Amino acid sequence: MEGTDRSRLKRSRLKTRIAKPSDISIWNDVNQNGVLLEVLRRLKRLEDHCGLEKSPDIDEDADSPMTFSSVDSDTSRPVSLDKSHAPTMPGVIGDYYESYQFEGFKIPLEKSFLLSIPDLLENPHIQLDYTSQIIYHTVRLQGIILDPGSHKDNGGLITNLYRKCFALTDCWLDHIQNTYADLFVAVSMSLEACNSEVAWKMLGHACTIAKALGYFSVDGNPGETNGQPSLSQGSIIGETETDKNRKRFEFWHLLRTDCLFRLSFGKPTLMPAGSWKVNFPDPTITGVDDESSRFIQIHFLASMRLALVVMKYLDWADAGPDPDPVLHDTTVDSFLEEVQLIMSDWDTDELLRMAKTQIDTWFCVDMVFSSYKFLIVLHQSKKSDQDRHKLPHQAVDISRKSIKMFQSLLGSSLHGFWGISLILLHQFIPFFILCLDIIGNPERGDLETDLTSVTWITDYVEKIVEERSELRPVMIIMKAMILACHQVKTNHLTSSMTGNELAGY
Image 1: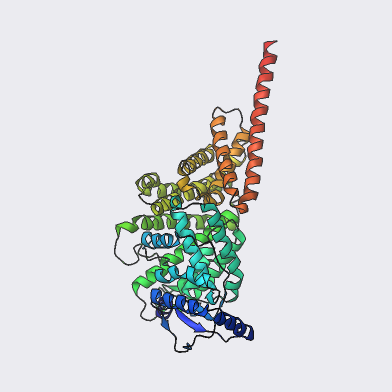
Image 2: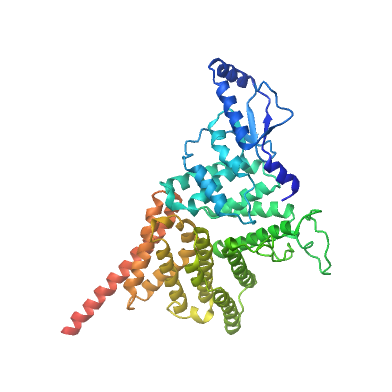
C-alpha cells in the first residue's frame, strides 16, 4: 500500500457537508428536542474511542450534518438504522483480527475504527462512505464463518450481511477509486456468494485496480524481454521488499481466482499471458517465519502450484483439442502426474489431521477439494474414456472420496456454513459424477452406499436453502438428480425380481 493511502486509512476524519434547507429544518427540530447534545456526545465518544482528530475545516458549532469517512472519499450517504449489530460483533471483529495476523490481504481499516462503526450506523446524522461499510460487513461475515459455533442464527445473519454488501455495490461502483481499500472490497466481493456473475464482475474491478496500483508489474514491465531489472510503471520509490512481497502474494491469489472462474464457470481469462510480470513472493512476506502462518504459507505454495497446472490445462484446452487421441491423452496424463505430485509432496490429508485452528482447516480443505475437483475434470477429459458407456472409475472413486470428506467435515453444526462455497465450487462435480454413475451402473454392489452419500448432501443443501434462498436453483437440480437415482434403483430391483420370477417357471 502507498504511504499516503496507509496514513489516510489510519487517521479517520470528520468532514463537513453544506447543509440543505431541509437539513436546517431538521436540525432546528433536533435542537428543540434536545437531541443535538446526545448526537454531539456520541461524536465525542467516537473521537475519543478512535483517536480522531478534527479537520481544520470543522466548524466548532457543529450545526451541519457530518460525513464520516475512513478513506478520504467524498462518496457517502445517509445510512439507515441497522438493528443487526448483535452485541457479539466486537467479539467477532476482535477475534478475526487476533486470528488473522498475516501480512497478505491486510484489512485496510484499523480495528478501533471498525469497532466504532455500529455507533456510526445507528446515528442518522452521520454518513459513512460505501467502501468502509462493505469492509465492515465483510469482516463481520468472515469472522462469523471462521468461528460459526459461537454465534446463533448464523444463516440469517450471513444472508443479511451478503445482502447488505450487494445492496451497497452499485453505489460503491459509482465512486470506485484505485485505492487499496477498494481493491480489498473488490477481492472480497469476488468470493463466491451464490451469484457468480456479480462475483466475476467484481474480480474484473479487482484486476483493474490492482493493475493501476502496480500489482501486475512488481518485477518489471510486462513484455520486457531483455531480463534487465527496471522501475515498473506501478513501482513506488522507496517501496520495501515486504511491500513488494505483499503485492506478489495478493497478485497470485488474483491469478488463482481467475483460473477458478475459467475452470468452474467457463469465463475468459482476465489476466492473459504477457499482461503481467510478477515473481513468486517469499511466502512469509516479511522474511520472518512465524509458526502461526505455517498453514497459510503451505496453502499458498501448494495452491499456486496447482493453479499453474490448471492455467496450463485451460490454455491448452482453449487452443483446441489435439486431433490425435493418443497425444491428447498423453498431455492429460502429464497434467494428472503434476497434480498427484503436488498432493504427494504436501500430503494434504495429513495436514488436515494436523490443523489446530479453523483457519488452518479451511486452508487444508481448499487444497484437498481443489485437487480432487481438478483430478476429476482431467480424468473426464481423456478421450480413451469418452468412448466407453461407463464413467472412468478414477473419477468415480475421487468423487466418492471428496463427498465422504465433505460429509465428515460438515457432520458437526460447528461447520454448518462452509457449504455455501464448497457445494458450488467443489462438491457439485463429485455429486454429479456419483449420480451419473448410479444412473448408468445400477447393478453395482456399492450403489446403496453412494446413494446414501448423495442423498445426504442434497438434504444438507435443502437445510441451507431455508436461510439461503440463492441456493434454491441448486437444490432443485440436486433433488431432481436424486429422484432419478432412486427411480433407477427401483427399476433395477423390479427388473431383478421379475427376472427371478421368470427363472422360477
